[in-house]
Length: 391
Ligand code: GCO
Ligand code: MN
Ligand code: MN
Image (cartoon, rainbow, N blue to C red; front, side):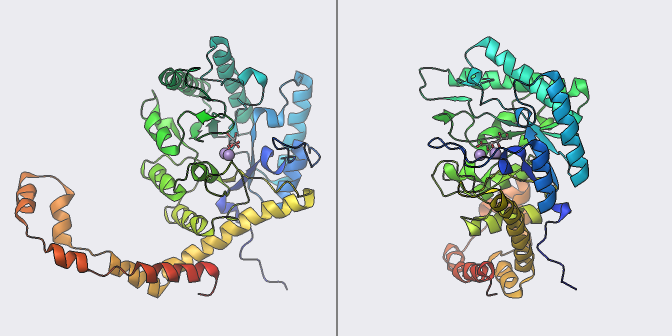
């Protein structure tokens, strides 16, 4: 009997893909689609076949913006059947507020009050649709919420307009009893020259200014922070520390390039390793969503290889992270570099007048402290050996 594949997708990992990811036809700014468009129910079949846990959608990935009510009902019926046949969940839904020409200058931040109101209405309807399929996370990605020239839009006013929309929609979710948690996704640019709230850190600060901050968190994406040259693991750590990691978009990306949306782990293996380790060590239990697409050269068979690859790389890195945590040499170095001193730690844990007085008069041997060994080269090479598979 064949041995069970230890890296097969584990349903506990909640691996999800968007209809727009495996359904991506390979269009780019310079070229036409290279793959035939496949229907939402066919995408559900594909995801069932590769072993995904769920599928997410934008309102218009499922139902085109011009569909009649009858067409919408047919599509929903077909899709619901495909979900059932393939045992797939819909954990997240979102709104397309970027494709239609009406959003050419933004949605919630448009300079036109009617466009702003239409964007909020479209989101309410998107939330209704997501709720019909059981989604509990609602993502907001403001691809067009930005500018090319600061002559055209007031950046402070734009943040206020976004806040107004978020406050309105939080109330809508509560009044409908949808139980949504909102996840805000930052991106520094593309398709706009500059996008407001450019990185996850901005989003975290913005959330604190909302009327219902408790129901709003973030959806950080690897590619987006790498476009900005940031350490994604640190952005995710900030979100975790704030209790705000509601969702995550996994993919990969060369630093500083356009949004490449490559297969998870295919570019920066070391960053991917520490990301998986962080998510697993912190017992993150939301969806692990792959917001990526196959190379433009791929046909539909190769798209399956792409989807399987995203999940397989995650599973392999998860196993490596567990191994790192129980590797004796690595752990003894980790122990060595973290010099604990209970008395000193107690002194600085809380401010009291006594602690302050004691600390003020403590004598530190600065030279001796500076000489303490930090064998980081050794530790990092052991890590590299482990990642490269010789340890
Ligand atoms: C992008 C974004 C989108 C969003 C999606 C869900 O760069 O195009 O990452 O794929 O994640 O719109 O909100
Ligand atoms: Mn993206
Ligand atoms: Mn994304």
